[in-house]
Length: 91
Image (cartoon, rainbow, N blue to C red; front, side, top):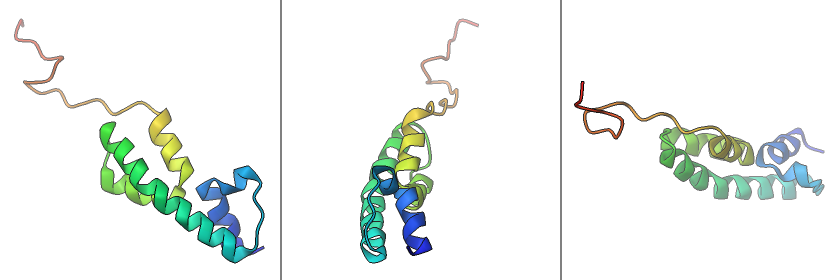
């Protein structure tokens, strides 16, 4: 099989389903899956305090793995500011 098809199959998560088709079908399916997961990954990343643009690119490049990373790992801590919920004037 074509190495590009194998790489895209693993990055999109299709290879985890043991789907084995011809190279053109694998590449097309993997690109479609990655294109669908990129905005979902970006939305999840932004809601967790991460860069939307960066995670759109990572979501397209790494597909299911990028989405899993964003969903599994803790959100970034919000910067402490004067209006943040953790701030107190009692000091």
